[in-house]
Length: 231
Length: 98
Image (tube, rainbow over all chains, first blue to last red; front, side, top):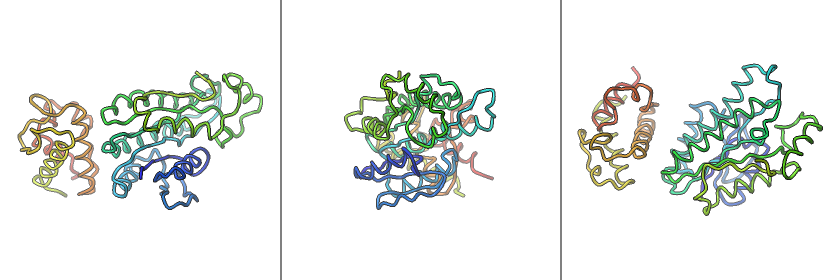
């Protein structure tokens, strides 16, 4: 049975990804800051902060003991904050970079160690269309995702010798907590900048992640797929 | 806390395991002085990364020690700590908590 680690599984896209891969017969290890009500014989939840190095290392040790190796990682956990740069406190900057960049890096580092003997492993990181679209009000969020894209491309090279591919998915706005509170007019203007001007769905994201995880995708690494025709 | 002999044994075990994984004939029966990395060493940089990760992992599993062998000190050292098992053992001993 293949093992996949998915971060941020308590709700939203992460939860849907966990349920999807459970239904596909994977062993799923998920995490979020708080406990999860997802109950399944093949699901194990870890309550932790993804930027807490000791907690992530401890999770990796437990996974190693239980499953010996990890075959895939989906770095879904992330936070956003919309604000004008002149009004953004440094505490918000630090919080976003800790969760989005440090968290993604820590999971890549620790899970890649467990993927070394997988033979063909996959890492999928999460970016956003806010980065290529240079969305006003999302300077820090987009900057943190730009860092993740750079991390993705470089790790693709550093980990290729271990037969690990590293790619990223950049969703458009989706009806989740992350965009709650964005004014309707602003959302409409954003959608109009996409080649396909509609809100994304969780299924759109799952489809892109599925593509990167496929066995046949072992020659695809260091790539970013933006949904909705954004480039 | 492990003594020097225990650390050396742990590293030799890690080298043997790596030699099997990477099929490195010269490292299958390692000695403390056998060159690992650098001049005459059998490891390329990727194999070295794997070895360091394995040693850190083994130290954590056997002794609950969290030791970083690729820290700034190691990177800037005049003599690389990755030359052979002996120098790696020295590096671990230097980093053991007091």
